[in-house]
Image 1 (spheres, rainbow, N blue to C red):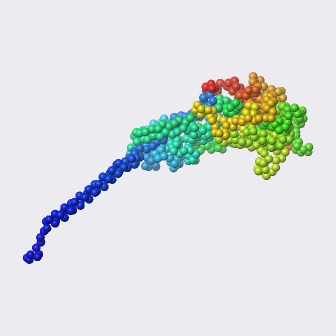
Image 2: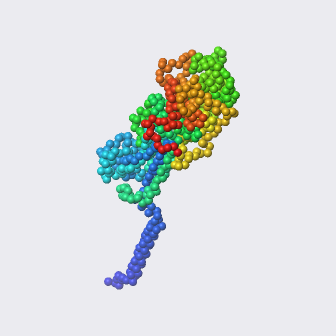
Image 3: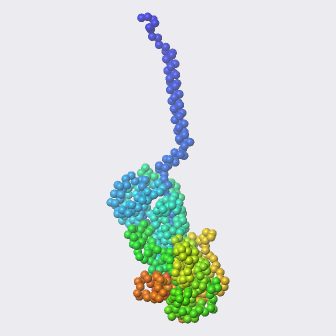
Length: 626
């Protein structure tokens, strides 16, 4: 073998190569270690708070706790809207993996209706905070509570929660005044802070409950809780207690309210009583009413259909929205308007025939007394309620002075400060008729308005407020329901409050009108002389509102008419006449004779001024007035 083909190994070169490879590997490993340590430092030091928060999110969640709702009291401390504890079956949707299976399991334990499941599904689709429980079935019985509790361990996401629910102890007589709360809907959430109402079940819908929702609701509490892998709460980490809603103390007198409601008997109608010294509403009755407790947890289709289709319209608030012809109760205001604008005087005499004609050959506008009243003056026109006097007075004045003067007493406008939904009624004008009917105002239109008929429509609250202004010699208050929020007097926003004086050119006319209204009761020919015999003076005015128009020579015969066509019976009054403490408007729909509301008003006066109630109302007595 030649020397040229011999293999020689270079051990030194191989050693250097190996060393270089080892060094490169070591550097690579070191770099990897540095990168790993940097990454760990970044994650555990620099981004520590971020990943701690993410980790907490997996085991910690925020739970809102609705606050206890504020209570509503009457003026004597009687609770009109209370909170009562109940147990409800709730579900946290995020913890449920199989809803059909859950539905099957629960249905085998207690009875859950299809409507309750449908309502639950609807609310599950609405906006809410994650892991917020939803009520599936409320007001569990003791037996249902026990049966669910036994199997609760295998019902993921299901809980039995203690909750407070609204309760109205006196039912339908107070429904239209107090209102009610109901389940929150997506539409309700549009008018409130969604976050604040997470977990809340109810919201004020109508009446005082609806108007003072923010005040009564309070502020929700917030809890940070730790949960396990299955979502069950293990411990509470932090807690911010809810702030209870503030209590409301109303001007409303519970005994007087219930008494007025009962005195209406089987008639539909309304009664409104006001304290003339404050404008506070003592009574706000609309009959028939309804049971507000039906709405709290969600009214059934059957119950709601029965209320909605009833011919007596129990859901309709007659006190705020009922439009009635004020009839002869408008005559004191018409007389003051005539005095104010120089169309009438206390001394001028007028021969009242049994009818009035604008033109000698024109239509005859009949007086309620077919034979007429003979020679009378303004005072006697009030005492005997002479229609023909006010026909001629309204014709002389025309609609513009009438409209301008009655506006000062709140007619034709919504003046209620702390309830929603009051109707404006209708105080007609020349401009209104042109816009509505494309016709001018005719003298005959004024004649009808002169006795509170024709186009004019007013609500019971408007007539009661105007009567209160008469009682206080022109000091007009916008009516209000709430006296105190907590311990603080209610203060309305600037521009509200509605307190103003109706100043007459001759302020003595207030006293003379008051005396004329007092003689409606004390005079032997007064239309409310049946109220004589009290140890205090009553000032009042009767009224009979036509439901339909009679032909010129047609006579009203109630015996030949259906009950729904009978006249409405009205009465306004205040007492004591010289130092009024209460003013009342009452209407019996299709009541016929004004004796009914007059008798009711006297009984309310006796009750309020002398604490003269039947013994059965003692449960509403409460504390002494403060």
